Image 1 (cartoon, helix red, strand yellow):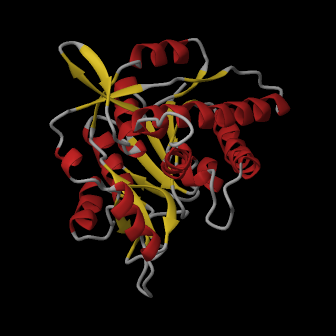
Image 2 (cartoon, rainbow, N blue to C red):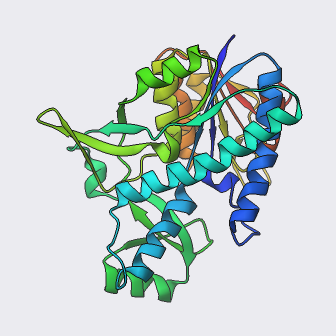
Length: 310
């Protein structure tokens, strides 16, 4: 069966209008898993990936609040914590949805290490927004007290940014291949994977958050997947987003999409990484990349909505 890598954002589990409680995250996950069950019913094998921007920021906030009571956790361990916690929610809700349809499948979360380059310039220029939004005053206090780098995020407030190096390799790729061959549904490179560097043949965690879409594209290429399916907050990618001249892109070539990216249509903190991931996946041999909302993933794969890059 054709293999699809499905990348859902951390914001798919935490909606802007919600507090982000675990109950809300389970409910949101269940909604998305119904879409994925439809994809599986359509005859596709899937590998599920996910972001962790809101969640890892909340883990770090808990670390900050508790640092006088318990030992602090480095960012790579916080990444791994979200891989386990979010993976648990996703694998349980997908398993339950498949059971409702009498389609017994095993779903398993892989705590996946992703190798990055220690010399990546991203370590000197943090750009990845994580965690909750703060007022300008609160952001200035965080910067002064904790040394956080804070940026204004799309008019919604200020967020912490951390390094986001490019993914180079997936350490556990052979294990993921074996799971797929055994008809197990893997959840891999969660949160972009746990970032590690290799020194003298040994792996060491680093303080960073890898972009989940770029990691998903790399994973898809390593697995030989035909399709990369990326979820986002809109049904289809738009040019001139938010303007009266906004236009949805349906089927678009790599060349056209690359031109829109060069023209500044897709901001780095928003749609930009998804576009870069789609292009990278295709440049390395993928057949198609599709971008749509989590509520319409099955329709997008069927060609009924979304942006399809070929």
